[in-house]
Amino acid sequence: MGGWGSGRKYGSKTTTSNYRKLDVRVLQRQGWLDVRYSVTITWTRNKQPDGTISIRPESHLVTLSYRHQRAGEDWKSKEYTVDLDRTACHYGGVRVWFRCPARGCGRRVAVLYGGGIFACRQCHGLAYDSQNESRSDRSDARAWAIRELCGGWGCLLDPVLRPKGMHLRTFRRLESEYSRIAHVSLIDFAKKARISLPEAAKMLNGDLPLP
Image (cartoon, rainbow, N blue to C red; front, side, top):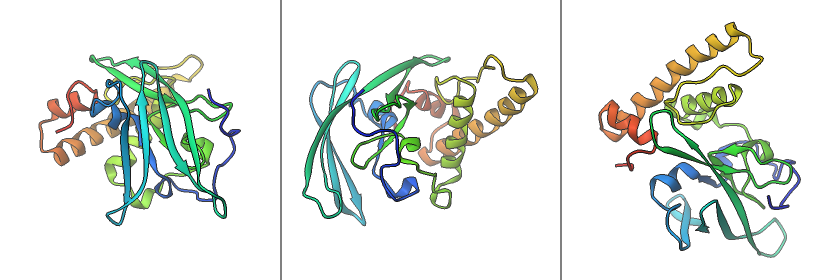
């Protein structure tokens, strides 16, 4: 892990919509984690360029390179590595995760948010901006929160497992909620992509590229 930061909040903004987002699921689906050269990603705001980052993948990590400017300070070049973790999906395929590079963290997450360092939502102290999220986005966020509570990662359509020490009644409640909201995410994704539910399931598990 790199020593960029100390696990505190890295900025005064409080919602995820205010931060640049780096999603490992997008990198995996685009095949960018399998190349051995740098890939440049550009963010936009109001259809205008609003920042770039260079990502150089290796087998178990990616190197991030970009420039960052704090208020009243000069631009500074940043370069550090972020570890990758892989978990097998219940229905086949492999899911890739970032390990948050903030000092003292190391959480396994799908999304990192930019600032002085790209770190997880908890390290930045961010809340989800629910008003700007679609039903599918809210369902995804809740589904992954339940998976984390149950100590499992895998893929969205994998069943959750009861962790040691969790009361059976609590687990059954979470399991039922998870099944319902995962189905909502699958249906919404299939509608947006205009594909069948089986095709959507394979894409969410990383077995097929996005259309």
